[in-house]
Structure formats: C-alpha cells, structure tokens
Image: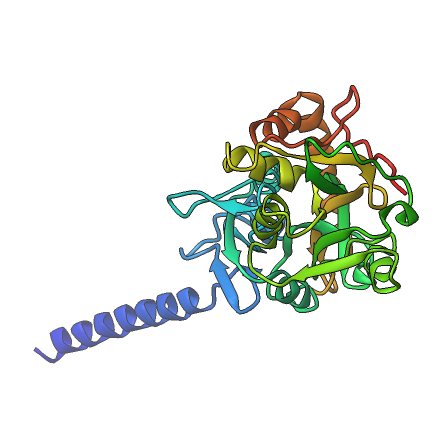
Length: 320
C-alpha cells in the first residue's frame, strides 16, 4: 500500500513539473506588435509560436505612413465646384474627386469632414489630420504645409452683363465703376486698388457671396463683380436661366494660381522621409491620372474652364 502511494506521489510530482514548465514557456513568448497610429497597436502574434518575424511583416501599416488599413480623414470646406456636397450629403466636386481617385490608386480610402477653411489651415499646424483639401500655395503656408503638384487652379476675373461690351486691361480702366467683392485674398493688389479709389468696392460678407453678386449685377446695383472663373461658370449653369445674361471679361485679376493638395508637416514630424515618399507617390499617380485624360473629364463635368496641356498638366494663364 505504501509502495503504491509512493508511485502515485511521484507521478503527481512529474505532472506538476510538466504543467509548470508549459505555463512559463507560454508566458515567455514575446508580444510582437506594430504601431498603426499614436496610441493604437495591432498585435501581430497571438499564438505560442511567432507566425511572422518582425522583419517579415507584410501589413501595409509597417511599410507606409499614413497607414492604409485606416481611412484618411481629411478636412474640407464647401467651395463649389471644387468642393461641395450633393443632395445625399456626400462630398463631390472636382478637387474632392481628383484627390480621392489619386489616393485610391495609392491604396487609401478617404473620409471628408467639413471644417471652415481658416480652421483647416490651423489644423495643419497640428498632427490631427495628415492633409486637407487642395488650396493655394503662399502666404507663409509652406512653413507648415508640404504641397503636392497642382491638382487644379483658380483664376479670378470680373463678371458683367453680356450686353455690356466694356473691356479692361488695367485698374485705371475701372475708374467710376462699382465692383462687387468679398473678403477673399484675390491677389494682384485688387482690394488695395479699390480702397485707394481706383474704383468703388461693394463688399459682401456671406456664406455664398457669389450668388449675391450675380443678383446685384442683374438688379443694376453694381457694374461688375469679381469671382473665380470656374466658380462663376458653375453657378451660371446651376442657376440657369436666371444668370444666363452674365459673362466674364477675359482679363484676369492676377495670374492663375494653382490649387495643391496640402499635407501637414506636423503630422509627419519625425517621419519626413515618409512625407516625401507619400507626396511623391501622389504626384506620380496624379500625373498618370491626368495623362489618361481623367482629370479633364472631371473638370468638364463641372463646367470648369481650367486649361491643361497635351499631357493633362495644369496650364497657368497670366493676368494683369
């Protein structure tokens, strides 16, 4: 009897040692993980034996930044036909669709969030968003934004009634005229010329100032108004036949200015090499997209007069 108890005790001791060894082995396996975004981790190994060594990870998050497993959340403001929402609330517009298409070719999915333009610029100084909808280069923005090649361009012109055969070439030609304007940066010293008395400014502050300008012109309250050419063409088509009798004078208020995809330098702080790779890849895909004629199709869809060359690249016409 005592002999059997001894055998049984020895057996229990062996089983206990084996269980203990198994327990410690399992808890000694390293937890291989990769950072996908600040504060978030995706565990790559959950079994007792590593399935993939860290140097062999194939998930795109380890190879690119921003990570492709998550949507790119980007701010935009409403500025039709460049950026707009359709009747379902979905973001549309030339710049939106071009950026989405190019990023899609790079393997990204985009989610847009509506934020006023000035605030979007401020957010580019933080790491909250990787980029924002295209905007004009300049005004010190290069300090906190890394710009892509041009996505589109803007060209400010003066609009008048079609039956008005007036033409102009310098601000002196506008003397005595009442010109509608908004609180935008038109460049070329336009607002300064008006304030200096070379012509009279009729300023409008509103969410959609261009529509107000169109109606004031048709009501003979102003002689002309300044508006980006593609914006005016889009609104004239959208509000036909109400705005049919309005057309633009060909002289530009300053040269055309490119609209470029705006990438936050702060977001890529410490990852500057990946920022350059990201924008370089965007520029390559944008060039291919343009050569295939896809960009001009989008411009045509929104009745935008943005000239491109035979390679589909943006041509920037001059002005005064």
